[in-house]
Length: 572
Ligand SMILES: Nc1nc2c(ncn2[C@@H]2O[C@H](COP(=O)(O)OP(=O)(O)OP(=O)(O)O)[C@@H](O)[C@H]2O)c(=O)[nH]1
Ligand SMILES: [Mg+2]
Image: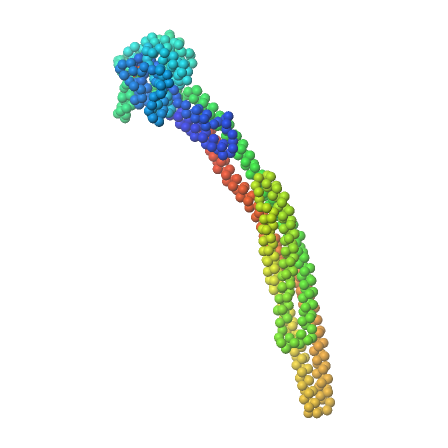
């Protein structure tokens, strides 16, 4: 078919413009006034209009059939075409009588989508129909094919008709010397020269002139590939090349493609601006999110500095609990309980560890809960302002303050449990129980010895008294009492010493205890603020969604931009 290059460009432009329109719609770019579907369809899909004129039986209808290798127009030895017939594409074959001189004929032949044909009666037949052609078709036709029969190319009616045309119209005219197979080949150049001379004389210019045998061309085309020789001989190839060239170089069509391309370029710029605005918005939202994350991190840092120095007052709590524990130990190491345990067994060290563990765990948990309550208040106030900021800049509603409070209360519970566990473990790691246990064992061993000695002396005094040995029982009793006195003094003294030692050791372990807890405390704070920052998950998701939605659009924009650039080079 003719003008393949033009149609390929047109199709590419149509695809690109469709893509641009789609992209514009997705980006809420208003294309009305610049480029819309109707303009696109009207502009690109307007078929080329070929009008064929000439005298009766010149071979006009045969020429159209030959050009498109389709039996579209009726051919007859007798005058056949008695009115203007406008061939158009239609899903079904039907005729529509526009006027008594003009018939629209819809035919389901593919090429009619791109080419509309106007077959006319002979210029020497119905005078009125020429007026119809002149007024309606000639001004808008892309090509005017004037057919002259080789037997008589001088027919006055056609030349008179030509003479009435304006210069603009004459530039669209092509002369076809038809039925050339009816003359000897050597006559043709002579007739062509006559035709050119006549054209110069009558219309002041020489249009392109082609000799052709449409009948031969039609037969050749219909019996391809064997008809190639006939087709070549018929002269139709030169006409086809000429038509292709005039389609591809048609200033009107080029202009239309240019206009469309420029309009599409304009829309592309608008889309680019919109994408740019969206990209900037995403970037600024991203910066806001980073800022907020930094803020939260700073809050965490402040909390670490503020609380981990004193560990929420755990140092003082430890000192207090040490004093209390020392008092308790003092009570347990008094004379009577101490002597009872010498007999019943010693469990002070393990009990003291249990007591101090329980008390410190409770104290650490209370202190941590107190710190967390402070942090929850701080975070809730921060979230309140954050919510407003995010709502006004990004237009999204993040979790309510109540929800955040709930989330942080759960984190608080985890933090408190973690610190409680850590404090128990720390006490175990201080190894105070072992030292106390050893001291108590040693003490109990000495006390037991003195206790046994006192008892033995008492028994000996009793025995001597029974067998009535003078003075000896008295001496032994006094010694036993002395031993008992020593036992009491020893119990009191060693008890005080152990309590003193125990207290000192605990006091000295305070720093170790606090520093052992510090790592856990800092980790707990980190998790607490991580839970707080998790409230921003919606914002992160929102930004990711926006970014992932924009990315393919940007890629599509780039693709369309390059395609449009390539088309621009093709049609410039
Ligand atoms: N030998 C020969 N005969 C042709 C050629 N072209 C057309 N004819 C014959 O000329 C006669 C008229 O052909 P048409 O194509 O109907 O001519 P037309 O100009 O459309 O005629 P109207 O519609 O009546 O004005 C027919 O018998 C065709 O077979 C040709 O190239 N060579
Ligand atoms: Mg005809």
